[in-house]
Length: 149
Image 1: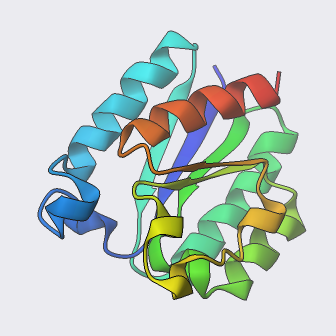
Image 2 (image 1 turned 90 degrees about the horizontal axis):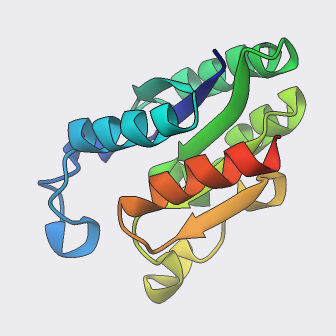
């Protein structure tokens, strides 16, 4: 059975308690369960990860590229958090291994501070889901599944 990698960047471990007026009250553990349920409907396993460290995220992206090429994974749903707006290294990692990625943002970053309007991931992402709360993960899993069939 193929899998989908769900990557979460910095501060997403605080989901549910950090700025609930912006990010909601759903915890990361609840997001993981939501992703497992949705992926299961599509016949996919889930590899769900979170790190506050850019290098760890890069390592996981580099590991995921060969998994896709071998047919064991369809790609990644990636909420890079603040690294979205700062990390050329994450851009380069996704591009280097040709990893199909759907970029996810819980909030509508375009209605927020101007520094959040630019994404280094968008140019190498297969698609982007913005502003649908944690349901964006469901949309991203489905979008990635459809895009890679």
